[in-house]
Image (cartoon, rainbow, N blue to C red):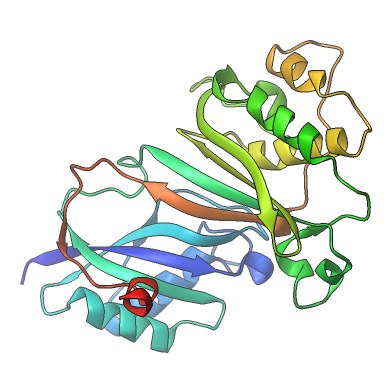
Length: 266
């Protein structure tokens, strides 16, 4: 039998994971997926993701690819995995793709979401694991002005925890905006690539601007790499979600499996 490649849309609560990438001595999302798929296939199976997420970071749109024998269908695998995986990982959809599809190298953009809780309820044990509860009032106009500064192509070296000199520091931001969320405000950013902890440094700095702790002009100075200006501390990992991974329209889904979300709205 020839193997078939399946595209998985994965949700996970990152609170109890040491990130996405497999580590032999720690619990990771990739490790849980590979263990579950290998049990179902009765043989070792590798799972490839669209990118890493750090310890504590969540996802509602991580993309993974897995190769299985032809006897499997996309929907059978989705149902089998959701019956096998632990409760903090869930497969929203599975779709068959061409054998040369690569979830990381074929991606053209990724969207991250960051939730800031300004309502006291954000500190509830049912919410604080998925947002950053803050006590100060945030100036919405300053948040908007700060986010507009980063649109377009810039060097985000000042917002990176670790360097990537071999790839450079330039990223192209297609969208960046703050919107309302049930318990506060939500930042969404879409870019062609990201540096290590980039979104968390951006949010931490913008929130300090909105608190009145630093001027909005600092965003431009940081992008210009002015030596006397540094970012604010990064926002906590628990408020960050990988929300969506975008692929070219040329990526064809051979065997679509309707997601739970789309089935519910049909």
